[in-house]
Length: 103
Image (tube, rainbow, N blue to C red; front, side, top):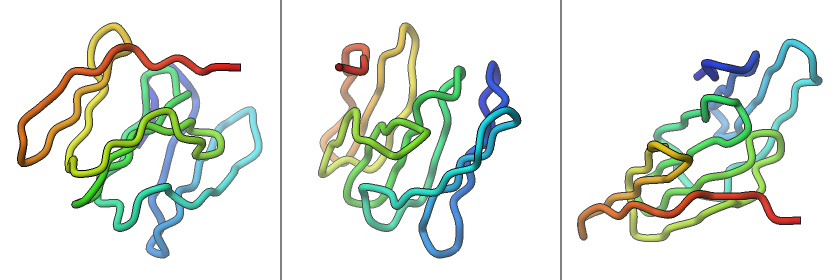
């Protein structure tokens, strides 16, 4: 997947690792915080990545996989308007407040 406003892409490898490639930065690889990743996406600016699996979802920093949000029992995740995140599962859907990186 690619970022619309950034020169970065993410790739999910067959071994389950996530690779990030950028035009002006070194490539990096990291192991996802959830098992059995079935879908990934990248924020428009390329800073955040979503990971979805059958048992959990996560929003992670794209450069190193650091966790911004982790929701067990969810199976879908999407980036929404105003830097909000929507997560869903058998229980329904929830809109989560903006995610900000803390120091």
